[in-house]
Each structure stands twice: as C-alpha cells, then as structure tokens.
Length: 210
Image 1 (spheres, rainbow, N blue to C red):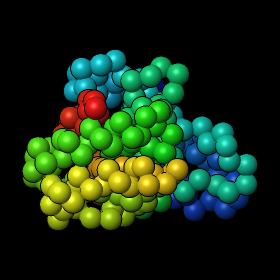
Image 2 (tube, rainbow, N blue to C red):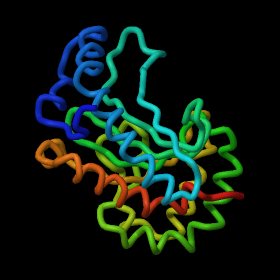
Image 3 (cartoon, rainbow, N blue to C red):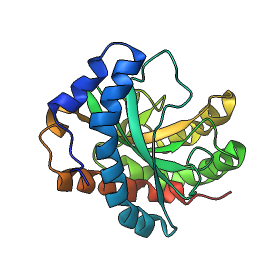
Image 4 (cartoon, one colour):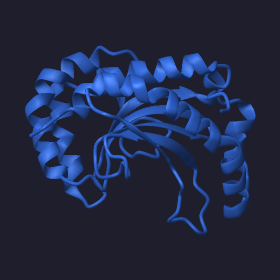
C-alpha cells in the first residue's frame, strides 16, 4: 500500500488540462494515497465516533466533461456510501489539503440534523471555537474557509442550520485547511495525526441526533 502523504507533484495534478488527462493523473497519483490514508484512519474515526466507519474514495462518476478541482476520501457510518449521512473527509486540491466534517446536500434527513444542531450549538459552539484552526466553509469544494470558528459567536453557529435547509444544495462544512506548501512536507504520520485531531474535535457533530 502506498504512503499516505502528498508531495508537490501531487498537488500539481490539478493543473492538468482536460477531463480524461486530469482523471488519469488523479487515478495514478492521488487515489492510491487517499485509499491508504482512508484505510489508516478507520480505527481512529471508529473510536472517536463510537460507531463502525467505512472509507470511500471519490470516483467522480457523474463527471464526463469538466475535470474535478478536488478529490477526497470520505469516512462515514455506511458501507454502501457516505453522502446520505454525516461524514468526515480528507480532501486534496491544487493549493491545500482539508480535513472536514460535512452534512452534505444529499444527507438523508437534513431537517432533523439542522434541528439537532440548533439545539446543541450554544453548548458545542464555545468548545469548537477554542480548537485551533477550525473554520466554517460555505461549500465542500472551497479551498478557503468563509470564517474561522473563533470569529463566530455560538448563536451565529446555530444560525448556520438555516444554510442546510435553505436550498436543495444546502450543506454545513466545518474543518481545517492546510496549505499545499506545508502539507507537501508532511509525513504519513503527520497526515494521520492532523486528520484525527480535527475529526475528534468535530466528533460531537457526527454523533448529533434530533
């Protein structure tokens, strides 16, 4: 199994022009490393969440023309897929690596999860705001966060529940971004440590129930 650490050449894969050429590079360079890091994170994520965890590497099966600007491995509670449940991600793009928690557009019950978040945000918000580097992302594909959690009041965090249900594509994404320059120097152990540190901090959101 390949080492789960990315180098400068891996990040430059997203400069490759054209759908098929870029996908070929992603399959050859990025996907094996995502599979390796996903596999290595399963035990730690399972312990943090108290439930079995399964790794799913993005296949981009719905794309046929526009090449992806990022790719990822997602860890969630379902063996057959991750999109209908809350999940974690390690996402790689041209300029960064992101360690994320997501309630995505295809979550099976966004209204119920949003209700649970509104009830819990005032309690969990102050804890999350103290975690170094955590931020809110408007979209799961954004490289730059919209705001550090430290800059958002607990009531502001609770209000993000409205973003989940306001539109069909509504989502809630929290996590940490590390620049490609920094992440390109990391070892496999540093990737695993950064991912688990982030996911453990966000595990209470993963476990939320209405």
